Amino acid sequence: MLPVAACPADTDFQAWLDLLALEPSTALLERIGQFLEEYLREHRLQCYVLGLSGGIDSSFLAAVLWWRRIPYQGFCLPLVTNAPEEMARAKAVAQAYAWPPRPLEAMVVDFSDQYRALSAAFAQRLGRTTPVAEGNLKARLRMLFLYHVAQLSGGCVLSTDQMDELLTGFWTLHGDVGDVSPIQLIPKTVEYRLAEMLCQYLDDPAPLRAAIAAVPTDGLGISTSDLEQLEVPSYAEVERLFREYFTLRRDAARGDLDASGTARIQELEATGPVRRFLASAHKRRGPA
Image 1 (cartoon, one colour):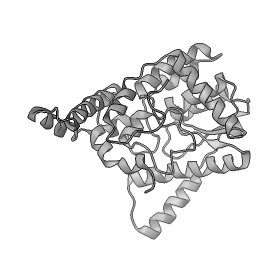
Image 2 (cartoon, helix red, strand yellow; image 1 turned 90 degrees about the vertical axis):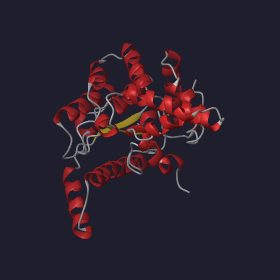
Image 3 (spheres, one colour; image 1 turned 135 degrees about the vertical axis):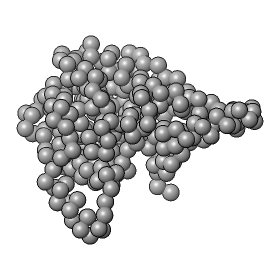
């Protein structure tokens, strides 16, 4: 279903273009569900563990797991910077798509006090911090809990990042990355359309529809939206910029680029998404 099965090298421009050309389909939606079923069975795991933020990525995966009746433990993990509407969406997803069903109180764990204590201890020792550093600390605190649950449950942690985040390095190392990344190579615009398709299979599609309609945000207090950090108006624009950039870089590698194309590459490398791509190669490559 996917043109490649693993993250391409940054310089494999054609592979990235093939992924950006992916179209949503019922077959692709089915394949995501089948992959999650097969992975759990083949690795003899008991369940998945998933952080629920109220955003489209975790809500989509929770709905897929419910649709396929795949066991998982989902947790809403509010912190001081989460808006009430984010947590309301996360709780609605948790209640509607838990499988097997669990009481809501078992799926909500507030780590605000632990975060404040940890942040204060680090600031006292180091004497400084930044909004991004604090955002990373929050993400890693949540992941610490999710991995602890996975260890105790005989499960593994699901990553919720999709391809737009993969390309832009828009995630926290050891904070957002789990053991399994079922949507990592799926463009965000395709994910939105798959989520719309999935609604027809849900007894209660309202929580997923609310996540589809929500302004995308990391909930870490860095900005009011993810798109603000990426410096673009939409994910469609993120993907358009990368299609143009990878096409030009591919042509340049083949020796088929003129001076205007070279100048355009430089312009694209100054945009938020492509600038982030160039600065985040180490994240996609993994430990050296």
